[in-house]
Picture (cartoon, rainbow, N blue to C red):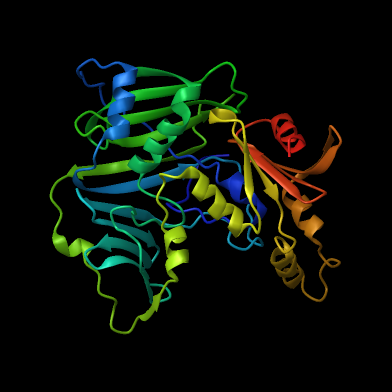
Length: 375
């Protein structure tokens, strides 16, 4: 399968949230000659990346993937948004703006003096998020923040369970960068081979990152800056006034904090996802072989089954059940006293058991089964 440029956001619902959430993003390296940069140790580079403060900048983001995911038109909320481009702006302080182009329509998220807003031109709907501290929140769309933030989070999560090295330098988005490589330690049971992060030599912000699977020379998903310009941004970019004819709504304060989350508390993020799934999530392992487990809400696939039945029409196939939905996109398995349906991508594995549980991780199925046995 050839990598497909799929855009900037991924929306995930139901029990496959963790599976599709394995998405990690990269951008192919520029073919320019490697720049000569001051020598740094891997430890120094990691520390610099984790503590770097974003300057005022504007940039263009591009995303590609070769996850090997099937087309899932019948599952509500699943699939990659067909965003053609995204622009990110930052004022070097609390202001940020994200604009995602989707054909002739655009999604915009803004944090600034007027608070936090989102606007969808397709539905002509503007939403204000009250009670959200702009110093703790950056506008996000479909769970994606800018690649610099996403890559920094990956470094933070994986560095302790990795062998960390610097593999030369590169030109990324027409800027000099160090190539930081995180390789799983031998004790990690993962389907991934390494993560490479290009870190800007001047600002120490990650410009791109790529995650490589075992057995393939190509990254599974990629995202990063194709343009990155450190320069002062006009104040009007971070002010927002809804269009006069827009449908303006105000989000519930509690839901607003979850819709635009900060990342300082991973356990709270897991609680939020667990609540969305109708229960709670448990974590087994750490680093590369982290596994998320939980219970499948009874209604998880009801809407999908209904939509498949509608697509079949009056002369279509027999009534579709939730199990039919699972089997349409996965394969049946039975191992260690556990049976269910397995879903695989080039980046990881997920299982949904017949007794209503699920597990997901960038690991083989055996590791998922072991995690389920610990529940």
